[in-house]
Image (cartoon, rainbow, N blue to C red; front, top):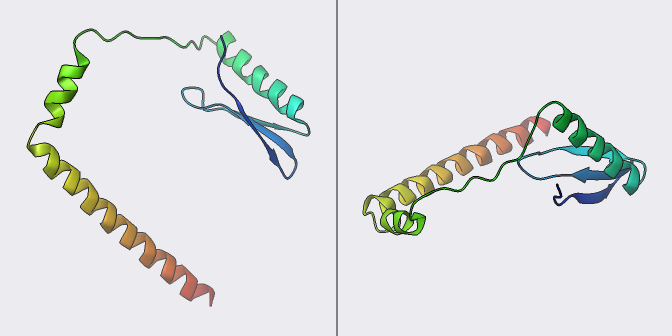
Length: 104
């Protein structure tokens, strides 16, 4: 099994990390040490029974996607998500402003 691993320098050496579905990271004084530590974590997971599988989904997914994209309620849903995002961002800005006032 092979998958991509991101390595990046950090203050104490290097961090090696995987994306989903593993979502693991390990740190070490060198890039090789971080990779080895990450490899050991994956090995432990596999020994514990973890497996990655590929699923083939039957049916014409393109037709289902096209149907969803042409659904008139889709625009309402997209607008509701945008409105919710604006509300949350405004709440987060207010919270951050309050935190900054307390610090001053």
